[in-house]
Structures are given as C-alpha cells and as structure tokens.
Image (cartoon, rainbow, N blue to C red):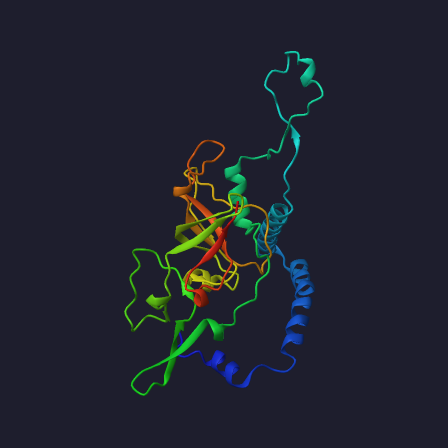
Length: 284
C-alpha cells in the first residue's frame, strides 16, 4: 500500500483536465460496444467464462428491477370453506385481502437488498468530503496529512474500542457520538426516545455508512423482528437520507405472526450536529 495518496493530492492541488467529464462520458458510452465486440471475438473457454459472468450480471439486474417494480397484489381472501353455502347478507361482500405472494419476511429481506424504503425525505442535499472531514496534521513538523476527523454526528457500538493512534485514520470525537434518537411514530403521532442499534444506510456513500455517520435524511433501524424481518417498506431514490435502526421493544409492536418486533428503521429528519440531538421518523 502506498505511503502517500499522490494522485488524490495532485487532483486537489491542480484539478482535472478541462474535458475530463466529457471524456469519461464518451468512454462509458463506448464501453457497451467494446464489450459486445469482445464477447463476439472471444472463443473457447474464455468465451464461456465471459458469457457466464455476463449471464450472472443480467440475472442480478433483472432481480433488482423486479424488486423496485414490485407492487401489492389485491386478490379475494380465501374464506376456507369452499363447499359451504354463504348466507345471503355475505353474497355481495368481496373480502379483499392485500396479501403478497411471498411471506412478509422474505419480501422484506428482498426490499432491504434492493435498498427500498418509503422515506419521509426522498431527496436530501449531498454532503461534500470537505464538510464531512477535517484534515489533521500529524508528525513532528506537522507535515503528514493522512488523518481525518469526522465533523458530523456518529454512532459507534457499545463495545467499541479505538485503534492505536498510529493506525487510526478516521477519528470520531466522543462529543459527537450519540446512542439515542427521538423517533416519531407517524400513525400514533407520538415521539419516543429509543436506543440506536446501527446505521443502515447513509446516502453519501458506503464509507460513511461504515463509519456510522448520521446526517439529515439518514435512515436508522429501531430493531429487527425475532423472525428476522426488518421494517420499512416502499422505495426510495439514491438521494434519500440516512436510515438508522432503533430499538422499538418498548413500543410493544408485533408482526402478523405474533412475534415481537424489537428493531425498526427510521429516517433522520434534522441536522444532528446543529441541534445536539437526533430526530427521526419511523418507517412503518
């Protein structure tokens, strides 16, 4: 691993070529034809391997598209006794059941995999790297600039231990660490203070999700069901906010199967670093 990030440093100092974006766009547009030509010309075992890899990519793409296009299906509820005659007052009553083809647990897992949530803040402002991190100068003469201090609110697990200072690149200050959130239930119109279990997704990137950075629009999960199903349904765009997981065991929520829900997702609706607290809306 290189000791210094020379390429990134050069870009920061001098920027990119003036036509960099245009060249990148054209290169991506040409890549489809280039790939097709390679697929036609590659023979033998290499051709088979290439075709197999492409088939896997297409299968994943189709599954993701199907997940996003998934809709609730209406059908008549099965009353259980097909042979028995119905009373006259029930003949014209259509018992519609908004059931889904698969069980809630399996469908929920699929939605989580596709990154689908129906969130209160569908689009939020992206946070720049300069705003998220502060460069720390280290070394005897303060020449080294590889350390970063996170300037946003973060969540760290209860048993978290810091790395030795020599190896710690990202520093999360204890003053900006939070473990509880004020979560509003949209149907009950009530707010509860709940413990955070983890940061499910930060829209600014996987690196921020891994660091547990909580920004406006972040989704937090309140706790998962004992059956293994999470919460939150619907879909959200790539620009949606952070989602956090919160412990909802105090609310006494249960699944249709009668199992206790102890974790649910919630979306952060404020700027925690400005307000000194985390406000979120439960995704039901």
